[in-house]
Picture (cartoon, one colour):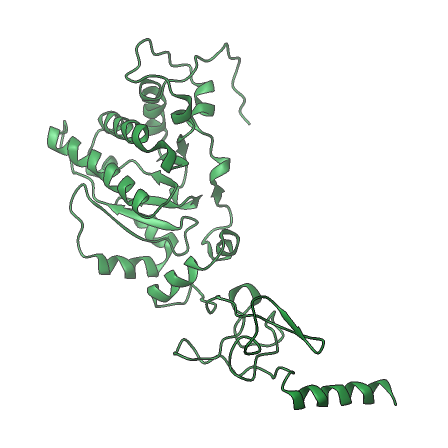
Length: 328
């Protein structure tokens, strides 16, 4: 008997025994009871030959019925055990923010990367801690406001750049159109369901196409001239309310913009005092609950303000003699 005849005969036996899986039906959408094939990690659902398995169980499940966990072998044929993977969602075209948000939650950090709006995103480990940055700061503080704490200095960073490119658990949004443009229209759709947000309070949404998993939205005070005590309290509340959401959702890293400065009129120097005091006091109580809090500035003048004020709130070791700074 030829090899071809032997194979054909074996296939006929397997079909008769119900052990050979059949070709899957086309992807029917998210309706209840629909047959599911492997999803996001393997390519477009229901399209054989594009990383999608060509086999599905005749019973409409993921594999042969009555089996245990893991891949099983029956008469030399490997079958897939049930997998909890959602259908592939294209975030650039999807109009359902709930579906997209659920899809993203089911992905690993590596799988989420293919959905980022940018390729030049910045990982958290690439952002220096204040402990590292302070080595190059020449500002000398004789009497800092707080005691030196090396552990806290590793929990804080000062970063100058684009907040939308930071791969962290959450970024804070204080009326920034750039964040909405980077995340895509699904963020706007979810924001519409939040209703209003009072000054000093915060609410949270998904991050969608951002490298950040979540966006925390807050409303800062508008200052005209010297900020009042109530405005300072509202600004402090923006940061503390955002940090409360961080704890509530068990997130471990967040980036904050300069809330209320710029067009909202809050002076940068006064804002920095409020921000640094709030972060320092919060970290003293919750330092084990987070990995990093990043102060993200965009303007050079704001960076200079924080470089001058950070040593007062997060004292570090005195820098040694330094030569000319590299321009690289």
